[in-house]
Length: 549
Image (cartoon, rainbow, N blue to C red; front, side, top):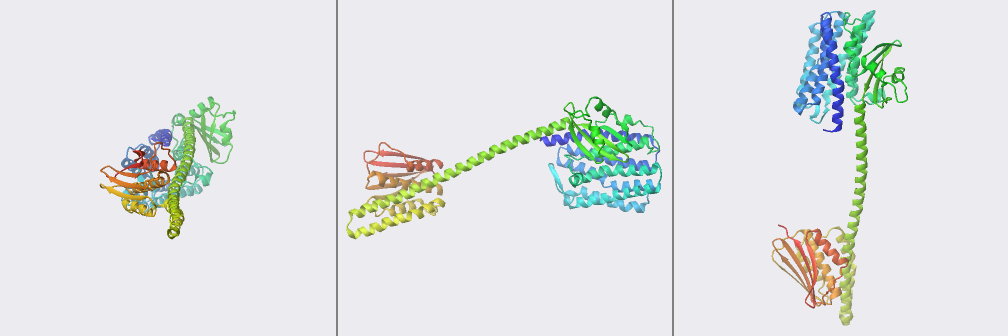
């Protein structure tokens, strides 16, 4: 469970549960006290859809599996699908005094039913949700068509209410405005959030879905109209009892005067929560603006207070909430992001170091290869030149030409070995015999033999070839030998290479670049290499490499 999920869950619980209690309390009082009519019943149905949306949202957030999560989504859209027809019916009753005929409502209900059916059967076609699983979802093409139809129905109901505004007079005109605003505020907020239009419209993007906040504003407007403007035949319900203990501080300003403030707001004023660190009143700052505001400031107690200011007709609605815990989570997330940035920087540095190490490794490998190839060619050329020096004139030119060929071919061989040895596909014994054949004109005899079953990889065969080449080069250069035996011996688990010369031997071995290169090549493939003097007049290089099982 990540921190973002905890933050979102905390916000959903913090806002939805108090608003649900407030919604249930006020509408229960309306049901008990208001004069029973189709108008009141239709209004309560609309409020029930809002409650169904919030309850389904809560249950969806904490659903243990994807099946329950999708079930609660269906519950939510069961209400939303019929929201448009019910609001049209509500507006029709408000303007005409009677419910609309079945000829008007039947097509709307049928359309809503098929819209809901398309949502409920989404797993069969994935047109509403193109992707839906436990971790998230994404919308398909039908979602936007669905939203357009719902919005069209709602706007039709709002049009009927606004039309009544021009035909009615007195408080009836004000009622039309309140009914239109009560449905437009939360739905508009939800549409703006879904289609990410807050940034283009208001210049900021809320960090969460503020539909519950807008629903609270709508509910407060209806409550104010109910208790002050006789919205439902003057209910004798105390506004203070309904709104006093909600977690938001609520202030209504009308015509430059305080029209209402709940108990939470009064407590926030008394304990200094509504003054910033400089002692300036947050309410005075936000209420003087003619545009919607959503600001977060630290008070004199270093708590974080969110102040939402919403202009309404002849006044301002202001909601205040202590979000210190939420802000603390945000600060912790920022700290974690800094730690991640630091970690990323360290990883980047390590990657650069690894890159340099790889480059150094490649250079070392190329240097070792150059040492082997060029050293081998030079030694062969020198051996041929020595033979030519001692030979008669008839063989002199031939040996000189062969020495020149060895020197001329050394660079192409080096380039070939730096890419990929083209001889890897050949049998290792055949490659060693070809190597011995290159030395047929040298005064040293080279004999290649093999025993047992040789099962090695192409990489191991290449290493054996290079170790043998370097060993022969060293023997020609240092031992003064007249014969070199190259022996391959295969076994069940390993393959051994012996390169033995009959030269002077060496009791005090000093490892140079060539010998260290041979040892490193053998170790990289899980093998080993040893050099030792045999008796008084011979030297042996023994390499062991694992066999393919």
